[in-house]
Image 1 (cartoon, helix red, strand yellow):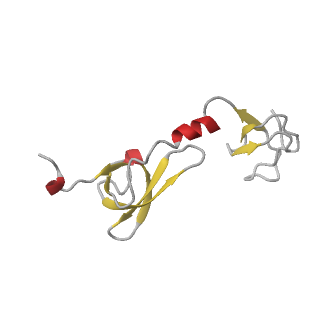
Image 2: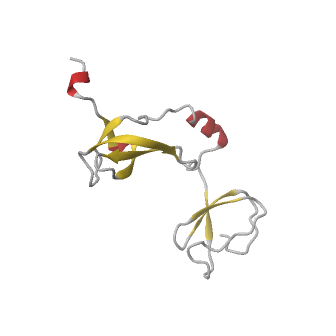
Image 3: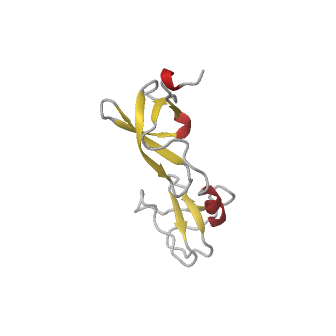
Length: 131
């Protein structure tokens, strides 16, 4: 395993053994110290496999639309202190590393919290439900 100060021989994603911090390091660059432990020798373990999407997968992932939309009224259904509360989606973000949507929900008291789609359920008023 490479350590800080060594030259990287192959582009990749690496994880520090000290605390699990992950970096992307191009070929030819020098392995850094762990950002969380800058004065200690850092061993970097290469991460391999299908954990990180390739550019080709990104193009396919772009075709996926968010489950919810800004202004949708939702209820928190996941294990969370706000479980059962209703709110409105005010922002949607997508992480460039995992391509999963995160939804920022604003509650009636103006507090906000961020959720994954599986933690939310679209709210439909009784009058709008079909019989």
